[in-house]
Image 1 (cartoon, rainbow, N blue to C red):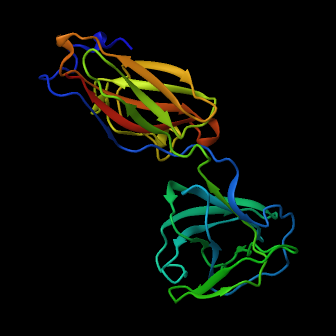
Image 2: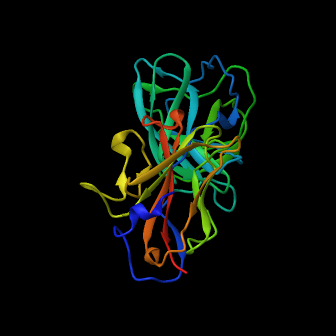
Image 3: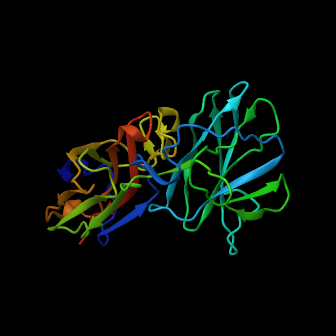
Length: 306
């Protein structure tokens, strides 16, 4: 990288070299369900429920802690319906907590099939949790995701605003949990420090493997042209993602087969560079993740010094 191009744009009084990370990244694409029950279901049972019980389907663990959403094998009759979907974390006794950790909507059509709820932002889970949805006591009716032949899985139920009861394991519920893939949330890090006369590297981990990545380097983490930073990218098609630094100098490369990358910065031993401040953020090409086809890492701020 040619740091001299930035001299005078963001120079401060010389101090000790440092690199500080800030902000947070957004989740990459899924690699398929990370937990499921009866995930190959093709036909529903004729069982249907008209009461106002709310169900909570138990998920004991997932391999990655970032939950993007879930799918249910269900249908709605006699017409499509959009209703609320929830994730409840488990309390110390293993029951669902009274208040959901996250909510979203799920739109269900009239044909049996897999229908998805997506959470924005994704939900961090480090304990057992439950998939749930609004009770099906109105028309059109959201049918319970129970299949004709399959493996029973645990669930709790409650009357709205009442206590949870269970567990029970007498129904072949059909569900899939969608997690951030093994890639997860891209993470910016650093090897070494931006000291005069040395080389340090800005690293990328947890990214999608063998894809294009861009290291954004900017002189500001407050403004990019007319845009204030951080800039919410939801409107651009990347919910949960933020642009944290200005686009001034950028370098592209391919991530490794394990989803890593790094860019090295040779720092000339030139006192005029002392106190120079610049900022970094990674953008990673990940088309399945969102409509923008990009996910972003956290940010980092470098201060050049002795």
